[in-house]
Length: 388
Image (cartoon, rainbow, N blue to C red):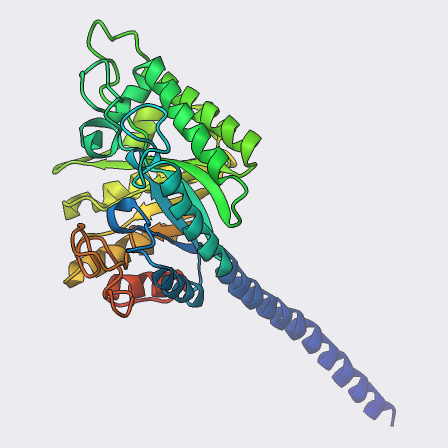
């Protein structure tokens, strides 16, 4: 009897020991699985899209209420919560400084179009980045008011804003008017300035005393102050990150701004725009620069969004493959959200990149469906391993 009791005691001790060894391990494994799943869900960036219209106008005759409702309903169903609307300077102001009322093509009439888009998006739970989509350099002629003249080149050039105090003041006046007109519109997520860059670093005499970097920093500060005092929304700058040439890429963000601490003090978050280099052998260099810039911002306590990426091959698999390459890498980095360039589904045939062409990832004007790049974007952003 005593022996049986001893055997039972030994058996009980053994079972307790086994339970003690196994249960915590199982619990830890279960907790790790739970954390892993939670981490994957938590770390998936938000989905957004750059939303364009015929002639950057958003006029209800072409970008109709029905089109807006169709598009935003699709976006909502696909989990897209943000749009970025590019506002070009030539739409915000006429060719005479301070002219906001002389035409339906620009100024207040244009801003009424923008209010309509923002309000409609908001009804579908979609927030809008109001992007002052200024271009800089020789490519800015078509979208910059005629009165804006660069003192260095004597031409109609967006870089006049950082080469002339008069032109910077004019830009700020235009921006102040825009913010005042749109402030309080339900659905505004944030305000942004598009892709500032400058070259050369030092201008030729007699303009060599002009400090373009400092003038841009001053511009950021003035814009942020206007946004915060008038609308109270976040302010960001959409920086180009990688500059590509045929045989090399450069880190244009670091080259232009040298990680100036004031940028991180001014901005609520940083946004980058990026495209793959045409030369496939430069992919690793592109990845290195993107990784360094995104991680560098995070190390400074600043969150990062990708405000623009894309590929212009609409007809073949090259564009889909480019989407996959970029997203596969960007999704390994700590980014808050990603917005492809671009979606435009209105019916005009007189404007570049109609549905089914170029960078436009809307495939069809009648149905308003997305193309294969759009599907790739949705799959990748859902954490799926897509196959082009």
